[in-house]
Amino acid sequence: MSRRILIPALAALLGLCLLALAALVALRPEPTKPVASVGGPFALTSHEGKPITEQDFAGAPFLVFFGFTHCPDVCPTKLFEMSEALRATGERGAALRALFVSVDPERDTPAILKDYVSNFDPRIVAATADQVRIDAMVRAYRAYYKRVPLKDGGYTIDHTAGVYLMDKQGRFLRLIDMNRRPEIVAQDLLAAL
Ligand code: NI
Image (cartoon, rainbow, N blue to C red; front, side, top):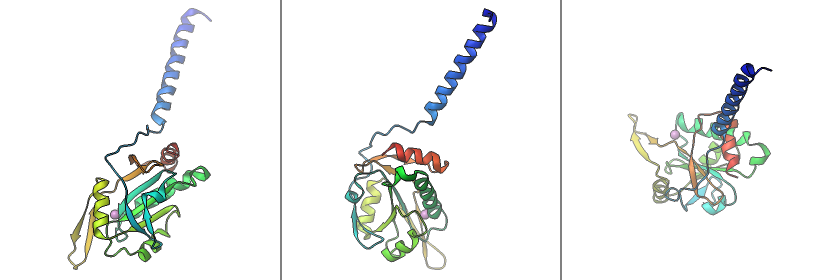
């Protein structure tokens, strides 16, 4: 091969390698460094009616999501996406968990939550508590919710819809972008194992 061909060929090859490397870096799960200012201990009641704390989640990464069962769209969508991502982790993700915390303790009794989460992956635990404990957890997670009265006399609830990824020590890692294919989200979950 003449030098006139070899050098551009090598340059093209090098370019391809750099592109491949950039793609690998872009696809790599994000770094996992805990953030101490978000999260912390909590004491709730599970959808089985049992006390549940952060210690019940120790040993494996878990997701946290705040919402309520009367939510018309955001909550069911997010819980469905969480289910799909958990499913996509396969056997390696068996120990992963997710916690769905109700910001509507008035209506979301453990029995109602149990019925609701039966629609989703069994690794999703729903929980409620009195308003004081819910509010404390919402604050600790820098989340937000607000009751909004409806014309019919009922109410709905505006709320943040971030999905928190906690590490196996229960420390906050980051919010997970659920607007990706379940297989991609699953990589983030498995990387935290
Ligand atoms: Ni919702």
